[in-house]
Length: 163
Length: 227
Image (tube, rainbow over all chains, first blue to last red; front, side, top):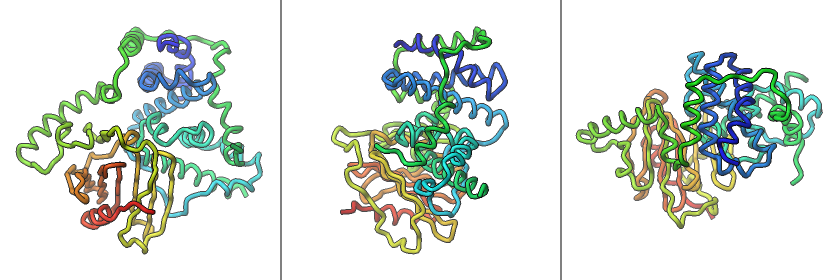
């Protein structure tokens, strides 16, 4: 598949995803453009994905580009190393979630912020390496690790609140 | 491989969010602006670029020019400062932008492409507790914490995968020597954080901490391969 075919096939869907977040035509086009910069950089790899993997990848890329633009517009400083402060609680082992009621776990996961969902999905479901995730999201590997851990901690806190 | 409850739940809870339903008709197709179409045509029809060139986007080009000019001026007066030039560091290329720098290691042909050996801090940090440890086949991050606010981070990564962005907005960028290896040293004065990055002949090693810089250097020098 050529990149131009790829563009024609997905551009409307990508725009729709961006517009859903940004509600602004210019910003949404900017988000699609930013997403495509990342896609062209990794196109050799993306070409080999299955259809489902490719679509998941695109959704995450566009969402990430859109959220970045949204934050910029809100004049929120986004530090390269991610300003989320990791607290002094021990790292969350995934075994913690083994004994949680499954439906409650599903519901709580769906309530996580988008950037947490993305990184958990990429790492645990798509089995991307942290390096691959850092390139997709354009953050440092250190920030990827921190975001994964923060996502699990938030999930754990929400589950405890629901008890 | 059998998935645990957590992985299965992530899959079941989130998969539908990442489906584009490409076959469904879009209610209203967007008519893209002429500027957008022009930019996309340029992007799509540009021949495949090397990773190095792609990193330097439009904003990056301006920032790199500025960094090069500043580095040239600084190099005539402050020889201890690292410039944005490739010639100054044999093991790394640094692209310096307004608020951050992107650092790429120069992999050698015989560098390992996975973590075949692990490195640990041998400096006495017994009063720290291990806060987290993440590893995969290419990288390993271990975080240590003391008194809830003193941190040490050890990173070991293969050279072909090492390409982080580092917040250098309020940081000095210097060179240090770590056991005979040339190291990049970032000292963020606003947060009192020091980061040392060096190539030891096999892997890129990184130590970051808000301890005193001299102690951070000692910790870096203590990093050894473990049996």
